[in-house]
Image 1 (tube, helix red, strand yellow):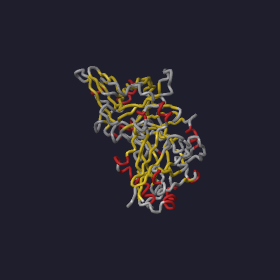
Image 2 (tube, rainbow, N blue to C red):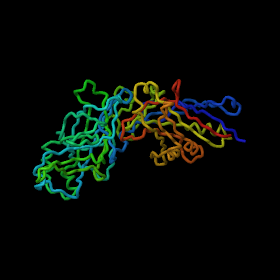
Image 3 (cartoon, rainbow, N blue to C red):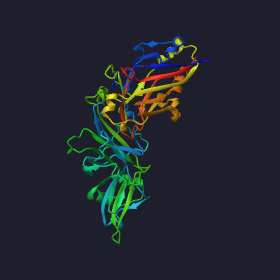
Image 4 (cartoon, rainbow, N blue to C red):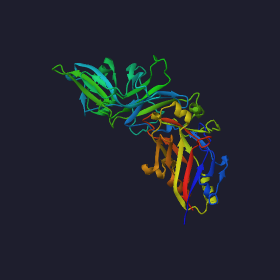
Length: 453
């Protein structure tokens, strides 16, 4: 009769601020009463390596509904700024802005709905931000995929530049109406005159020739005593509150408006600027990278106890456990199969003490690479309830089942057991977390395998 054994596979990762693998694998018993029946194997550090990756300019950010705008800075992840390039569309098939209808136009206002925000101090509900809106002068390309490092040319003289209190939780009062929180920018009389001068535009394509789009950026106000912490606003481009409104008075002197919209025909992307100076991530050497496929040869043991995981392409980790195959072949020939393999990664205690759990990724997602080198979910991740991957406040860790992934590797169905760990919502949130690596002295990352003989 098969007996169920619990085997702890505690594997250290030698993490560098760089790009490639892991660091050490050891087997230790959990059930001491069965020590006669379960073998213990210690794999040398040199056989397993670990690295952190910077996704950066390989992260697609184009044409998503949810976007981000703002800036944050901290000691672990450096400074990150996110800005937006976007087209805007007519809400009708055609429009004549030179018609008498718009003779009494008085303003044109850009609005974008908030869905929330990141702030390091979660008690901070709003922040004064220096916001600038520029007119894009280079056309968006229909078939182009845009990434975090993508840019378009724009007129350096802003349409609007000023300080706005960004308040993602505060409703906006408009006359006698109260509406949901949103960013609201009056683009001024000069821009209103430009739109009216477009005259009769019969199609969206013609309109987008006259107005190619906007470039929008926001940073903590220079008037603030502390500008380094920052705020990143979360935006919903498809909300009914997102778009641009041209206000005018009709023949009865009543205020009317014509709406422009962000829709699926309005191309857009998020641009991200990184500054890793003074952090462990500084060894990525972004200024010296020639392409998104370049890697940096990192030997630093500085992060052997930690893994850094962050959105916006800031950082992700790779766990390599190829030595598992050696253990499987040489030490457990009678192993029938895995009942469960559970990856547990605790949050670094110091980072937890200094940061709010609210800003941690809600879920970590495990990928592998297919035969073409593209990222695909590990097999377990297709069953979200079984896989889990969520942050557990009780154990202060993330737990992911990787049973099928390891079994497929040992059975020869996939060529590598490497696991790539990313945060969820990589383009629509500013979440990030520092995790314990498998060489952490008191609370290491680990894999628990339950198997039968």
